[in-house]
Amino acid sequence: MIDLTLSFKEIIKFVVLKNRKLISSLLILIFCSVLMHNSICAGNWNSNPFESIIVQKDTFQLKEGDLLFQDSDCGPFCDAIEKVTFGIDNAKFSHIGLVVKDQNGTLVVLEAISKGVILTSLDSFLNRSFDDENNPKVVVGRLKPEYNHLVDAAVEAATQQLGKPYDDIFDIQNDKYYCSELIYLAFKEANKDQPVFQLQPMTFNDPDTEQAFAIWVDYYEKLGEPIPEGQPGLNPGGISRSNFIEIVHYFGKPDRKK
Image (cartoon, rainbow, N blue to C red; front, top):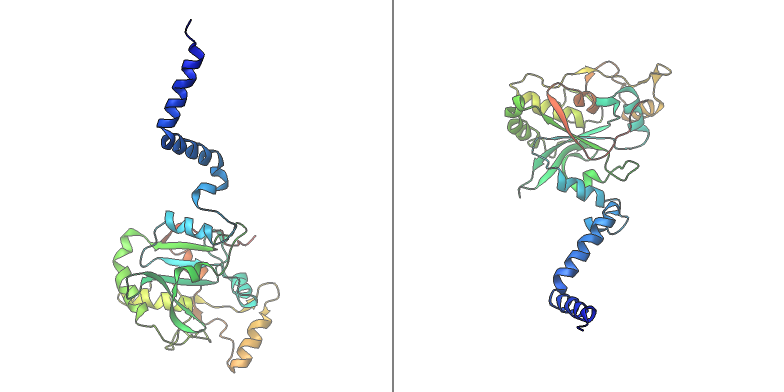
């Protein structure tokens, strides 16, 4: 009688030897499928909080002209701003930047900060503050299709302000810029001097006390300037609620007013 068991084993041995690469590939695929929920096979090999940013940027493509709304966690100043303003879905936004291309064609962020109007790399901008899941607290706004014709001119107008000083007194009339003012004036110029985003009376008062926040009192005293309560201005939260834009991506979850 023929030993069929032995013959079967020999056949299996022969198949394995001849197809080691194929079997190895299949095992790797099975292994990755089982462990995918831990992102082991997706490139997340450590607990570095910036890894989630890389995944987000790979799955969503920013465009020149996009607006980046940021919950930047900058301390008492941001807390004061966020307490009297609110963004879309009650998000607490304290900063905004504009996506543009640098001389090499790389997407960067044009923004007005204490250093003045500068270009900042996307990684540096996104890595400023994180939510509980280590994702950047940044939301992307984009002009609705019917207003896309404004983008190129607005980017050009904003770029022309590179190197200009920061507007530390928040005066819409001077040749200095704070973050929202830069965006406002750039799109206003692109729209033939007609505002796209609307100015509103600014307030520096705590709504709980109806008195100026202590941080603003100290700030303006050091500048030797009066607090511009009620003067025209705008903030990132207000821009995020504009009918001219739509929110197209959340890199992370900004804090929200309760």
